[in-house]
Length: 403
Image 1 (tube, rainbow, N blue to C red):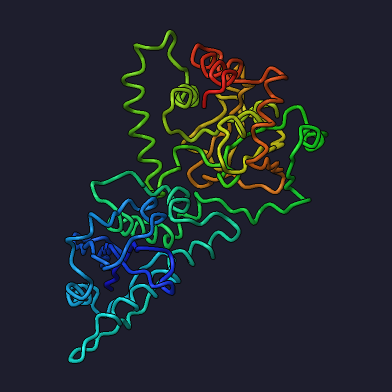
Image 2 (spheres, helix red, strand yellow):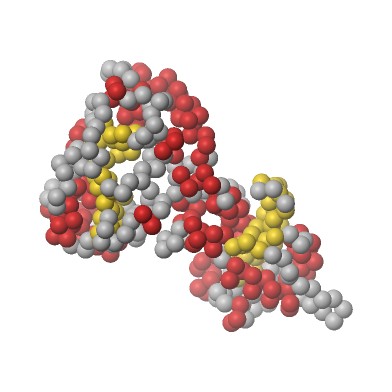
């Protein structure tokens, strides 16, 4: 089956206001595989580009002045897409623009039309993740689609992203690694707090051994870094390769070698290697710090999980693990100690932690700075959470108004 992914840029947001297409980028898919065939063109719209649109896509009137008009490339464009299904992101915008351009290109001796069926990737995203931020880049981030530049630009680059995102969305295995906000119901296992007193009330009654984890975006799933990859089925192979190289090169840097695989994973996690471990804290305040300290524009969240019991490291065989378990790290560092650090370890068969006993406390983005200021008064800041010179420097940056 052949499909063609189409992305455009325009002089403005609404075709009904007379705006025109100024760029088209297309990528070919054959049997759900991206091929090397591309179609890309800039167009002279024969009118001015809105300044607000230039701020978004950077395409200026001066750049477009010597480019062809749509009527000059319409036959080439229609030949490339053929009668095959189009793949669009937000068809409510793109399809009317395409129809309008094809209609305007008709002449007395030649009628043209766009009759292709299409699939809207945005609608698939909305159906899969109702109530979430389903912009192109948010969905790419959720499905671990690489959005770094590949040398392509503009509409052609976005058509490649849309193609990769479509393939991730229709792959059933990606449900193992994406967030599902429907599991949390406000007033049941979801609380929104706007003041520190509300936060204190929300954590009142949790056990001393409850695990707490703070995330800067409440949409992030409880998923270890090893599994944050769109190649879901190759996690074990990736882990084997990562750990083999890490162990080979890490030994000269360690004062005492780890005694088991879980200790190796703990050290690797501390130094930023993707592992099957997920960081937690026994302190709700530490979790709150991680939810707010970046001051990002997304609502933050604290997950509270009373797992009930912990395993000893020597009792855990990561290769035979069947369910998620928690443990105290014996290879503790100053940072783990300062953060009252704990870990859960996740088997490949159960990558994402989901449990009815998990409570989610959401901090709206506009209240993050307030919470950060409160935490500083309680002695929870970069200088204490990260007890090294980098942490101290970050704390001093914060105190002096640097971002």
